[in-house]
Length: 398
Picture: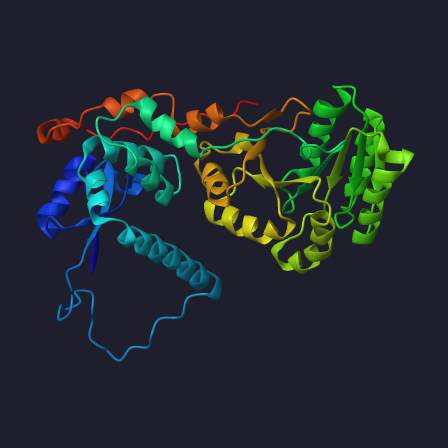
């Protein structure tokens, strides 16, 4: 099997080059805009593969043994990263090869579908999801059809609390520095104080220095109930008290702040998770920074699956240019997105998640123009002095 990249100023031209060199059976692996360092080669890079065996071929990079000592081994961390990236590439390639050959060919050699596929992957939507979306569409393609197909996979849920429960009990879980405490205070103001609802805050974050005191100050300013719980048993007892005693029984909104545990501390999460799981009426939100890398989003979400979160709440939207990775995570985990936090202002920088916000970010303001742009001829492409810059995608305003 051979895998090779082809560069050109249009996807169609790159695909023609691939078919000319590798034959009509060549399969599309990925297509994307060219990086800054390779823009002189063309505006787009298309990666294709074929099934031609390479046995007996001489390795052009092979050099005879000169008797010189071998180069120094790579550092362990770098080697680990390289292996991880190679594994991800192989997984994507395996999935691509498992796809229907005719289906992939339809996308690869249809100009409109190719542009739609590139549009989605440029917005950092998961490559597999981009294929799933585009493979459901047939030409002629319109922006409305593409938006409609993507909207079918996009789900939000902005209701706080478990349906049918007399009190809305909400727990926020997530890694250190994800913005749980800020999000909790914003929820307390918007859905408690501003709505004239009694609020009780329970914090279990005694791991971080002064974390509990920070929340205590906010509670005092807002005039809401506050309690520090140092053990999972204390949390379980507090939840029972809130159900059966006058202390919390009349609280309409109960917010639970949990400790942010790093990857090496996740063994301590089981006891906290068991308490939350034992109370099915608790609405647990996994809080993650939208600016986190796609691979890290998947890893952290997998670690916190022990808490059985029902929804995803994303912070730091002001630090990213596209929402493709977070939408991909939501679809893959089959969990709706609840809220967006885009800054430090309380409570203005928290807003309910909206399908239109997600779709506008991924498809971009100039989606219709981008999908309707016809590919340039070879002569027109040669007249361009430099390729167009990558389009910018909208973010939630602060």
